[in-house]
Image (tube, rainbow, N blue to C red; front, side, top):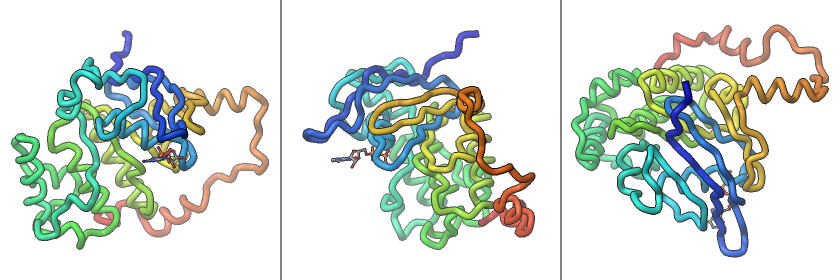
Length: 255
Ligand code: ADP
C-alpha cells in the first residue's frame, strides 16, 4: 500500500540576510512514522522545523502539512501539530495539572490532565511545580504538553539532550507509545543510537542540504556496501550497557 505523505517539503529555502541556511531542500514525511532530522549544529534543522511549525517565515519553496498549504492555511496547520513549548511558557505559580488545563484552554480542547500525566509516568507529580521536576520528568512533561491539542504530528527538538541513560531510554519508550497511538513524530537528535532505535527514516542535513535520506538500516548498509569497516573490533557490549546494567533501567522510572 502506498504510504500517505503527511508533510511534503519542496525546494525549501531560508535566507538570513546574505546567508542561506536552508538551500532548497525537499523531503516527505509519511503518516505515522518517526522521522529524524540529523546533522551537525548549524546545519539548518531547527530552521526547517520552525518553518514547518509556522513559527518562522521561509524565503521560498512549498510546504504542505496534512494537505494544508503553509502559505494559504497556517492556522489549520497549527491546529494539527504539537510543538514543545519553551520552558519559559510554564508559569511558575502553576502546578502540572493547572498548566495542562491552561494549555487545554488556550487550544480550546478538553483534556484530562491526570490521564495525560499518568501516560507519562508523572501522576505522582500532578501537584508539583515544573521547576521542581528532574531533567527526565521535565522532558516527559514537555512531550506530554505537545499532545494536549490532540495533534496528528508532533515535533521534538533534541528531546533527550542532557538526560541520563535511563531517562533517555524511558523517553524512547514514551515516544514509541505516542507513535503507536497514531501520531507522526518528527525529531531532531545528536544521538545516533537514538536515531537508530527510534527513526523509521532519517534525513542527514549538512550546511543546509540533505545529503542522505533513508532508513537507518539502509543508510548503514549503503556505507558497508561502499567498503567501510569499523577500525576496532566491536565488543559485545558498550559502556552504556555497563551503566544501565549496573544502575538499572526500570528502577529509575521517575528519573
Ligand atoms: P541547527 O538546528 O541544525 O543547529 P539552525 O537552523 O539553528 O541549525 O541554524 C542554521 C544556520 O542559520 C546557522 O548557521 C545559524 O547560525 C543560522 N541562523 C539561525 N537562526 C538565525 C537568525 N535568526 N538570524 C541569522 N542566522 C540564523
